[in-house]
Image 1 (cartoon, rainbow over the protein chains, first blue to last red):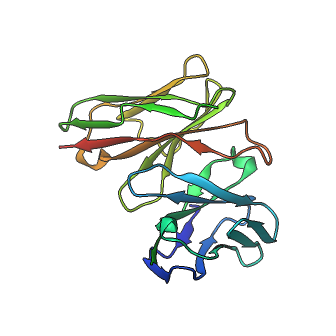
Image 2: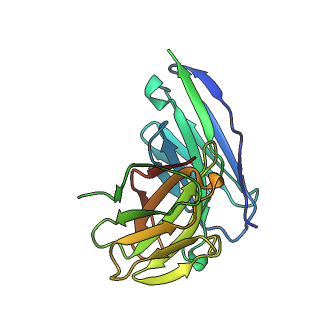
Image 3: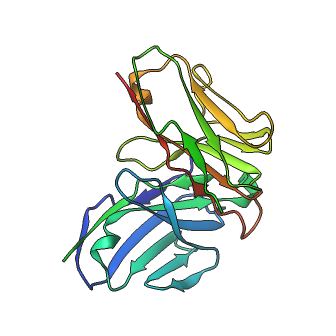
Length: 112
Length: 116
């Protein structure tokens, strides 16, 4: 049974600070790693994906992947109240048909 | 480019009734997924189609759930009979065929099902 674990939160951060979210996964065969943002009552929307070890930056977001330790993280710089949402980590294995296995999500609250 | 379309957006039924959901993927996306998201949890894959063939339905409760994608485009997901524990949001997603950097999945708005 493939598992993806996230701290459910809430993670409370002041506006302008850095929010740091972590995710661990059990399947060493996982090859693609995704971060989705989900506002209350809405569907998940893709923030970014990462395939290779190291950091990947996109605007205020940075994803970090460490396959040896089986964890992936997301940093949100200069956090804004509009970043308040649940962040879902998902992993997939191309050999398994790209099925996404999601974590339970981390709820982030950015306080003005 | 139009996104993934789903209908209805909301549905309330009594237990033991049947219900059907519809999904139209992004044009050109050969792979279609149905997920179930229970409140407070991450989405769980129910079934994956590539074109009109089933790739993975290992987590679909086949005694009550069924899905089809007859012409390789639209898809329907049916529950018959519904149970209280089926109350959830049913999400449809689509992607280009798997295998590399183009395998990002895009989600529709979801159908919120309440079983009373």
